[in-house]
Amino acid sequence: MILLSNAIYIDFETLQLKSCDIVVSSGKVEFYPAGTYKGNTTETINCKGKFVTHSFVVGHHHAYSALARGMGAPKKSPENFYEILKYVWWTLDKCLTPEMVEYSGLVTAMACAKAGASFVIDHHASPSAVNGSLEILAKAFERVGLSHLLCYEISDRDGEAIARQGLEETDTYLKNHQGLVGLHASFTLSDKTLRVAANLMQKHSSGVHIHVAEDKYDQQHCLDAYGKSVVERLNDFGYLNSGKSILVHCLHLTDYERNLIGQSPCWVAQNSDSNLNNNVGYFSSKNMGDNIMLGTDGMHSDMLQSMKSAYFVGQNFDPMSPAQAYKRLRNAHRYIAQNGFRGDGPDNLVVLDYDSPTPVTPENLAGHFVYGINQTHVEHLISNGKLILKNRKVVTVDEESILKESQKLALALWERMRGEG
Image (cartoon, rainbow, N blue to C red; front, side, top):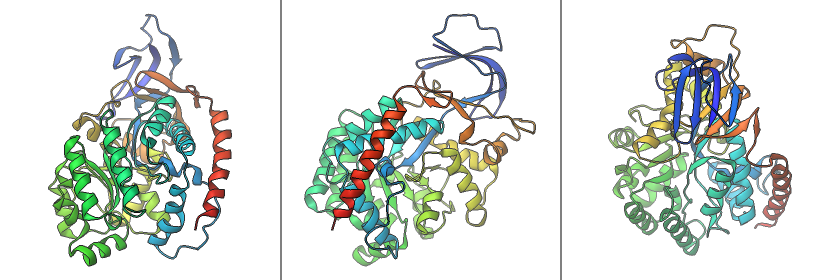
């Protein structure tokens, strides 16, 4: 039982403020007038002058890319998005070992915790180490203390045998865990694989998690090969019928595709930083409804940064108010709740040490989130009733030893990549 004393609590849905003592236990949060709680607790944190609110959710992540930071240039300099995938990410994911998957998960989970996120929706790929990879990743997130919704990135790009392994890994994992059916993108998936994946989705009452029209190449390939657009193709397989399905990126869509998405129960994950990095285009929510959440696409683990990017980049392409940007940040909670996924209950809280030079009120709080509050203000994090970040330090694992080992594994990964091809 944890006591957050003399806190300023922010209701994450209404943005109403109240001064109070907050008592947190597994699955339960209780509020008392500030400074009045006298019961026994295992941990007491003085939150005088600090803000406490619901922790964040990463709507789309790629933990498998965690060991890429600082690596050298690929053998061939990519000239377009397809070559970025071929010479960078598809080279990297093929070189991952089970141990590298584990440490990618550990360092990603630590980064998420330090950014105030207690729940991660991840999209994993390791074609040379498929079997058991989701279980490895799940245990890594759980060691740090994060909840998760995982999937394996099924694709035909590495041949039929590996595609089959991805389908089998998904089936095995979903028998015992909450998760999704992961798919890379339309241009790397045959009708046969999409059909089997659709059957898996139905079998496990799940949804798909797939990249959609991130680059114009995806659309052109679909039109050339199948005579239809990407979203039309996915819709033909029933993927848009599930409120659990997540369509990632959705940049290069026709008005008809936007309407298909807007009239369906599925969700869209926006990733502005990644879109900028890959120079693939700009997101617009036009006609796609309100089921839009934010992700990081493996660029970082900071959802506040993702919200700011969506807001500032969107001024020319998808204009929104600070209140609308904040709502998009928080939409992932609605996605989780509507679909009955576990791990994002009221016992997930972040403590923000935010000294504002201006008044903080319910009316201007969204503006503080866009223009003021950032990752440096994250001081403590409670995940599923357990304190996992204290004084900006992860307390569930040995950060120093994990980072030391991950640095060794990163060098080994880069060496393996140099030997590819």
